[in-house]
Amino acid sequence: MRLVDSHCHIQSDRFDADRDAVLEAARAAGVERILVPGWDRASSLAAVELVDRVLWLDAAAGIHPHEAGRAADADWQAVARLVADRRTVAVGETGLDYDRLFAPIPDQLANLRRHLRLGLEVGKPAILHVRSPAGRRDAQDAMVAELVAAGFGGPAAAAAFGDRPSAVIHSFSGPADYARAVLDLGLAISISGLAFRAGEEATAAVARLIPGERLLVETDSPYLAPLGAPRKRNAPEWVRLTAAWVAERRGEAAEPAGAGLVAAYDATFRACA
Image (cartoon, rainbow, N blue to C red):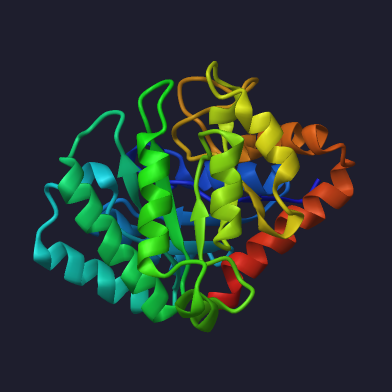
């Protein structure tokens, strides 16, 4: 099965001892491309530097909602310069995390808004982290409102992206009507090992309703190991487990499912390369 990993923090220090071996294992598993998002200034720079060395990786630059209260103007300016770099294909990881609240909500919203503006300016999709406390949907509803207010789903996004996805909901979590709302705004949805956890059962139905051209899979390595992968540290090779789960839920055979995942990745990110 052909594979992509649309969200993998391979620049994390948890891979410092064996990064090349982890990437070799991913290639052996069938992974053709990996998107490496930053979560702050240093990790965004590391992502861009890594794609210079490993040509089948793609970089994204951004400030995570956990970092929104700590990032200085100089950090944002550095990230914005990296987003403009030809080696960078997406803006992020950014978003809203109302579950852990490592940053105040007003700071998260301000951080998200500048990423969304930048994505529209440069025509590169935003990578969006969206989490609410268990059983709630505060962040999901706030994200939809922010996307609409920023012009996603409207003429500005159409001018910047055409038919390409203007943003990606990474590691999807939430109800089916939320998925439909972001799809109506022209976004893509990426499914991770989070789908295997208790409380995320709605993702099985969501996997069936996403149009193939806007369906992505990911590991979010080193986090969110899917069922059947080592729990201590997730790695990009294990995207094969999530991809197989998604294909099964959609009633698709491995070969066409994998080809669809690669095509969706290329249409979302490689058009910017």
